[in-house]
Image (cartoon, rainbow, N blue to C red; front, side, top):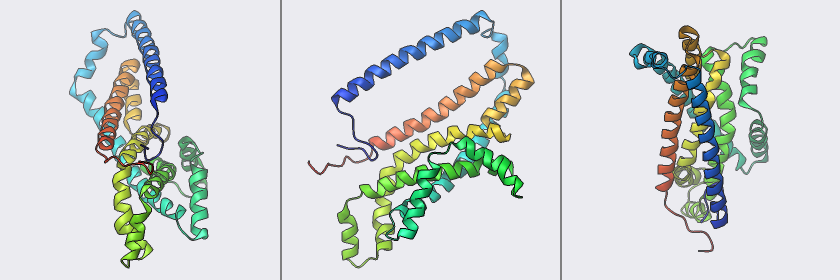
Length: 269
């Protein structure tokens, strides 16, 4: 049995993964316990320092930042998926002049950190007269970067479709483009849906780079709030918990979708 993007681990690999997971969990729990003790020793766990976060105005402000985060993530994901699908089809094109630039883009952009692209949009483009609004200073680099990642997801999904599906479409008189659009892509989209959701989790986390461009997403809103109320540790812990809940929910959704995927037999089965 093989997954879409990687082989399923065998018994030894699963055992090593379990051991590494347990060891990692023990280390993390130890660090958390140490941090809690340090916070307690320095009076950071007293009720009066957490009481402001039991009020609606605080949460209304943070939820406004969360909405800005979700908006940037949704727009970036939509544009990235559209660009990624175009790049995937380009990499699979029979025309060399389409295939080579698409492959070059994917391989090059995947190696560039998103932060570098943010700095390009923030500092380089205005020198050439292109000064984007704050929202697009975050969305554009996220789209440029994630399009290359979605391209590989879509390409893997398309290649996972059995060759007989395309041959059947061509046999009934469909063109290559019609076969791809009507037969291959719908099946590939269903197969890669869990991977798309998983990739969206990473994209959502990358929206925290809006901090760099002063876009009022969740992390930047937390910074402003901490400067206002002086509760630095409490504010960032609350922000981290919000990120944890949102990303854990998306990860759970990805696992649920993956579990519902029909099992495909390998060629040797």
